Image 1: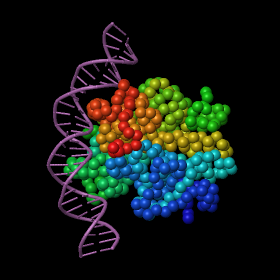
Image 2 (image 1 turned 30 degrees about the vertical axis):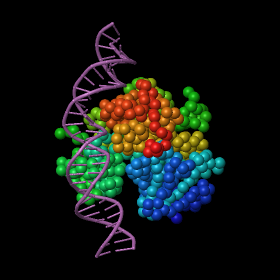
Image 3 (image 1 turned 180 degrees about the horizontal axis):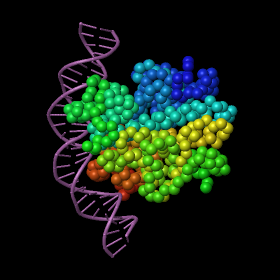
Image 4 (image 1 turned 90 degrees about the horizontal axis):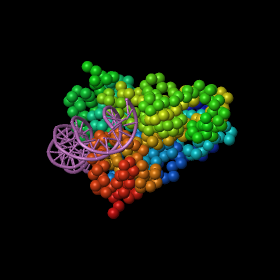
Length: 223
Length: 223
DNA sequence: AAAATGATGTTGCATCAGCAACAAAGCCGG
DNA sequence: CCGGCTTTGTTGCTGATGCAACATCATTTT
């Protein structure tokens, strides 16, 4: 396999990666759609990297309510050590969407100062650093959205972020609408209702999952 | 100054820290209560570490609504590079609460592979890694709370987390109640109302900011 | 001490949003 | 092609929640 495409191994020669996989005793696993990649709250001294495919970090409430906590794309990192503590009785797990592949490595081993001071080890740490940072950015954006007080504000905030990332007023949702409601953490029907109002008010237009956001770039209060 | 207490410099001798501060051209600054430590959206190639005191990462809405995005204690890290992108027109800044001191360093310099492969540099990166990871955990917890659908659920979730951290059913709020409402991202009066109901229902008792959470540890649905 | 500021409580009200319960359309496997 | 499955779309109801407008108390400033 060619590892050069993966952000974790950027700048590390394939041969060295193979050596590290051996040295770190990394596990490499394949998953089918719907399979659980890992469950939080069970030991969890491992860090995972999604080598291929797509996965979701989901939480199941005691009542069974499903909330998508994170979307994990190729190259994404996950693992209890990096994020969620097994707080409550809730079930938190990473679920594969479609076929995927993941690589697991031991967190403590990763952080341990290498006896040989090998350069690829510290490069790996640097890369992980950047991935975790990106991860943080995702979380921050999520907090940005969730900290809004009404459904409309949440949607506005989310759409603004989408537009910013797409660099265009029209962009496709990376979600199904149901999943968007989950992400936004509101009732789906209430969200649909609000979306309808917003469409009627001319704020957005939607063609399936293709959204066109109509609002001035910088400030709404300018007139 | 003795740096050994600070998480960023853990495992690095004081002399070497001084050398690094010079080598990295780090800036060290003092702030009074209410002063702005840094504003996001202005360049932002810097990473800050709070050496002493307490600060808050706050966002001001276009409408002026204040939301606390993060609490930063001594040893905490902040900086645009690590987290928030200057999304919208909103103003995001780190504000000092009380007297505090911060150390700024250049993010790109930090990440640059050291020519001399000096051990303290890579140790610094490792420490930063752990701090960012802790930061991620904070954000995750916040998402946990914010993704709840009602004020009561938010409070329950927050109190459970507090109890978990305190290791006891009774714990002090790290917040003023107004700030808690901000953190939870709801209207303060609505939160007060809900708290009252919860007190009447015997779920919590409060003596000032000292909260006692009464609820079975694991599952509510058990009978 | 007086004034100013901020935290804490409280209430009424209009609206919002969660919930339940549908119907229709699209997608998939057998 | 048919029968399930998910997604999308809609509606009524009602309790929850945001908002405004207060009163009290504590803390800090003048």
